Length: 148
Image 1 (cartoon, rainbow, N blue to C red):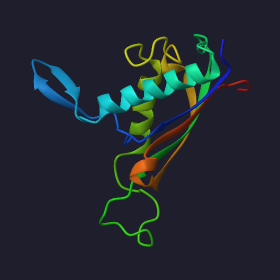
Image 2 (image 1 turned 90 degrees about the vertical axis):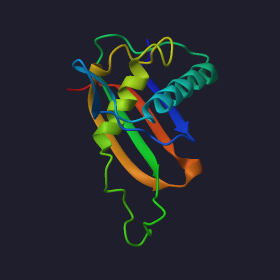
Image 3 (image 1 turned 180 degrees about the vertical axis):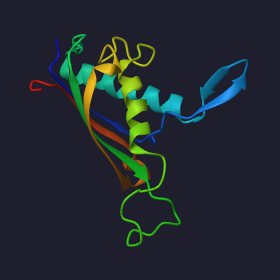
Image 4 (image 1 turned 135 degrees about the horizontal axis):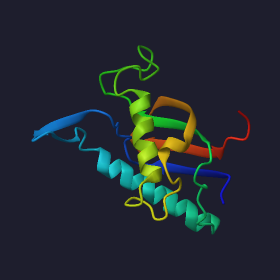
């Protein structure tokens, strides 16, 4: 079983997950149209990691995990670096984390999923920063938590 994993999702704007849109009959869909391509890009990045490391092992079920991630988002054209060096406007960092967790744990994006269930993530260290369009994405490290 795997004890750590490192991968980068590059060239795709991170998409938040959280807000749902009602479509009637007590049914809801994800509000963001960017979510599906983002999750697919996460799966592709994990697949590239599997190939590059020649290791398709995943994290064991019932293992506590921690995730370190830097989300790189594009700076709006109207925002000057000196005026706002940090992306302090929505979407929230925790909504980016939700979409990353699902992208790593759902078999429809990568098979086998890197983590069996995103509820295994007990610790997040996440940040969002501005970058160029080519830098967009996420730099991710996932590790087994060894201490309480």
